[in-house]
Length: 475
Image (cartoon, rainbow, N blue to C red; front, side):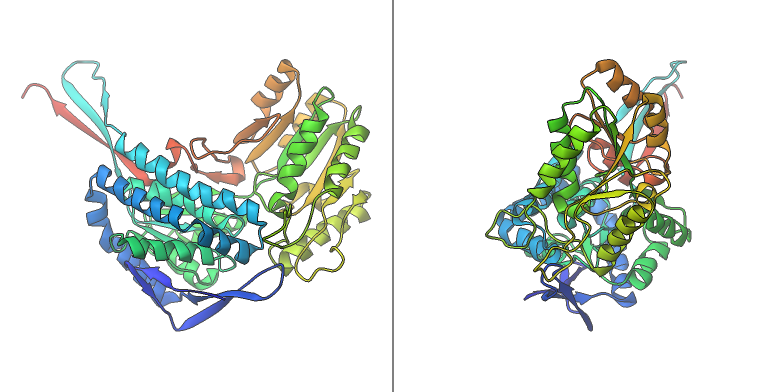
């Protein structure tokens, strides 16, 4: 069983309280961490505040060197970091590579970006002054991470914060803290300046609220649900803060009559059953043109039946369990509610036979409509909900009829159709005939799905403030 310590102020620390980390496939403890309380939260915030003066003044090239040193340590410890994710989430081994690689990519990308960032010269229309627009670190940042991609979510915050010169207090989910704590071990190993990164896990109601309510952070950044985002903003109102949040989704996927149905089925099934559907951008409502609905459903069922469910590092597993009992129960209630209100269960809808943990079968529902909870609520599980449509204008209206605005999907081979949907879908991201995410591509939502951005150069803006210096040319 793995044993992990807090990382605060450049040191690994053992607290008075320990917490077991439970594997959702076996329901056994796979790790034990030192858990933070109010005192440790205060220590981490103070350490970050103390580090701000020196870290923010550290030349960008030197900050980048530290980031690359940490990246190299991450690469050297790939096996252990992926093992942490594998155990704490019961994520299939091959899938842990995505978490790990994003951390490597983030540290590399933002180290390069900050070194190459230059001041901007602004035009003076009267010719009486020169003007320079520069960027400076905004202050201490505090990051709250979701459990679904433990290292990837950390990567989204660690890279831009370190590059920008903002000391960071990281609170990973108490469900999946092992991999983040392992990164803390690497920070300590390379001798990262004290307070630049601090990693602690504890309860949301005590540790999370203490961090949010503190006047020390200048930035609160979160990956989580919309309700959690609202709570963090409300709790953080003790001072004026900046917010960067990637929140809940209710992504539509529109499969048109002229779509490549094999491709559409591959993409939708791939992202719905990967990570047991616990992905914020995964299609929540799959709208399929009535002329191809039967054919598409058969293709989806064929793929869903082939998904291999389990937990075994030495086997090619496609899908692991959902995270915990509450997740399982919520998903099952959504499926049952849909059935009770007229949806047809084509596949799944229960726990697989002969397993111990929180596994939920790959599930396919048809005849779903807007009256059902599963249509309105983010499923966050391995369930494909299919709705047929006949009119493009109506399906666009239905797709946009949600407070969420994270991702959306279009499957069509008609350029006019693609342009129509891409222009009018009210979502931060529109994925056409595929899906693509990378550290250099901005990831963000609109409406109730968040503010700010993860990934790309846009993410740096969440951690930087602008300064204008105007100089009179004649005195």
